[in-house]
Length: 408
Image (cartoon, rainbow, N blue to C red; front, side):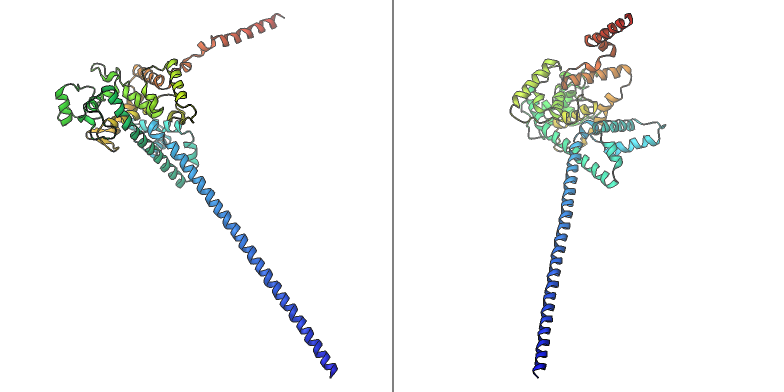
């Protein structure tokens, strides 16, 4: 019996030992499983964090790209095309690439010049647009358009106040032009009406003034008449309507306010000689001493010459600022801004002959001196530069060395 009881006791002990081992094994397995679950959760969290970082990085990249396109687009209405869509410019260029021998209309030529201006202004546009997926391309165009329209709106708002100040300072009208109210402007206001009056009419003539205000026959104001504000001293010569055209004081002020700064528009009496530029730079440094200098529009878009389309843009903006219309639109009564802009662009880009083209070139040179300062370096011929002392000296030294070598 004692032998049997001992064996039983041993068996029970062994069983307990086995059960203990099983419990330890199960505990170990559960612990390992728990550790694996934690590890899997950590890996999953790390993967999700990587995905979130990638999405956030992509969002930042997209946002940065969007801001870039909108900033670049701000030049389009100002120097490329005030009313034409970018798509129309691109489509015209594509059409010409496919149909090289076809004749082109005036409107098509204007679009093509617009495309060439676009690619000079945004030098990355053609290359980037060609490499893009179609959806990305559409997004780019949308952002460029938003930037373009935003800049046009900002200039409209800026000139609304500035034009009122300029008119009040120069003409001292009664009543003064309200800088905050557009409804009192236009032909109902004597000073604004004088500047908006067609060049072929005399605003001082009471019949003319009454006829324009009543929009009666013979006095309908359309885009087919250049307004007096485009002319030097606000006076046109009926026998020579080109004389003084696009030299109006308020037009120059508007241009400098848009492309340079409002402060630069205060003094436009100089003709762009060196003294004018030095004086303006000194004023700018004095007024901005200790402050971070903000780049103006011309610097941002690397513009160092006045262009026909930029003049046309400012002419439309000044006309709108003088008018009584409160929100931007293409039609003001009988006046069509789209055709007005085109008429000005065509004056410069479609001169009828060599002499007219020479006059246009001189006018643009005058504008560039007026806005950016006087510079004649680009007009120097190779022969003139060759005879200047630095180049002449280099040539003489080389000739002496050659002569010495030959005589040796």
